[in-house]
Image (cartoon, rainbow, N blue to C red; front, side, top):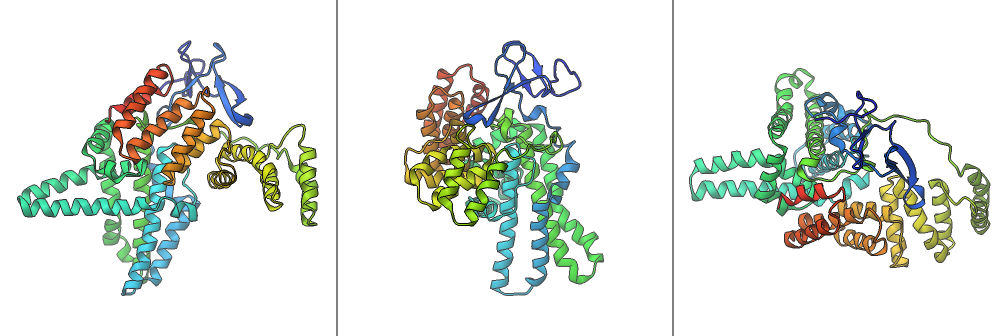
Length: 476
C-alpha cells in the first residue's frame, strides 16, 4: 500500500520519521548539507529534528504493469538507440557466410547482451535512465555474458542427460521447469555476478516466490517480448524490401532484448524490500518524477578564467599557485577546477600535494556520481599512498562500484578501510551488509556471510538496514 505525505495527502511520501511516525514529501522534509565536504544532502523531520528514513523506491514508482509504455520506450533513449541502430546497420554488411563474419556478428550481439545486463543492473539499483553506451559499459565485468551462455549450456546438458539416462518425458519436464525459472537465474546472475548463485535452487526459487504472482505476470510479458521478433519477421518485416529484412530483424532482436532486461531490473526495483535487495535514495533516478531545477553557476568559473591563460602559456607552477591562493578561504567546490588542479599537480609530479587534494577530488567525483573518473583517481592515489583515505561516503560508493566491475578484493579492502577509519559513521552498518553480500553472492561463503549479518543485527539492532538484513537472511 502506498504511503502519502501527512500534510499533503495527494503526494507520495519519500521519507518517514521513526520518532513521530509521520510521512513526508520533499516539500515537507528539512534538508541540510552534510557528509564529507558537504557533498551529501541529509533529510530531517521538521517536527522531531531527527534524521528520517527513505521509504524505498517501491513507494515512488508505479507497478511495472502500469509502466509498460515507458518500459517499451526505454531503448529509444539516445544511448541504447545508437547501439541498436549500429548493430542493425552493420548486419547488412555481415550477412555473408564464413567463420569471420559469424565471429563479428557474435561480437556485436555480445555488445547488445552486455548493455542489456548493465540496463538490468542500473534499473535494479534505482537508476531508470539508460546507461551510457561507451567502452566502459561494454567492457566492465564482461564475464556476465559468458556466464549466461554457460548457464544455458548447463541447462541444455542437464536436459540431455536426464532425457538419455531416465526418460524423455522427465527431460522435457525438467526443461519446462528450468525455462520457467530462467528470469530468476538471470536476475541473480546480474545482481550477484555469481553463476553458482544463479544455479542454486534455493536462491532462484526463493527469489521467484518472494516476488510472488507478479513473477508470473513478468514471465508472460517476457514470453511476448521473446517471441515478438519472430512474429514481426513472419507478419510485418516480410512486406518490406528483401534487402531490409536482416537489418529490421536485428533491430527488433536488439530492441526487445534491452526491453526484457530493463523489465527484469524494474521488477527487482519494485520488490527490492521484499527480496532483500538494497536500493539507496542517492542512486534513485526516475526521469518521469524528477523536478528539474536551473543549474547553479560553476562556483569556480572566475578562478578558471584566471588559471586557463597561465596553463596555455605553459606556466603550470604559477597556475597551481594561483589556484591555491584563490581557494584558500572557500576551498575548491567545482569538479572542473578540482580536476584541473589534480592534473596540474600530476603533471608537475607534486605527489604530496596531489595526494592531499586527491581525497577531496575523489569526494567531489563520487558526489557527482562520476564512477569512472572517481575509480581512476582512487586507484592512482592508492598506488602512491596505500593509506590514502577519501571520506566515508566516498569509500562506500567506491566499494560498490569496485564490486560491480568484478574487483572483489579491492571492494572488500575499501569497505574494510571505511569501517576501520570511520567506525562511528552512520554508514558503517551498510558497509558491513555489503561485505556480507559479497561473501555470500560473489565468494559463495554463506557461513561467513551469515555470521557477519548476525553480528550486524546484534551490534546495530535499531538501524534502518536491519529489515533488509532480515529479508536477505531469509534467502539462506
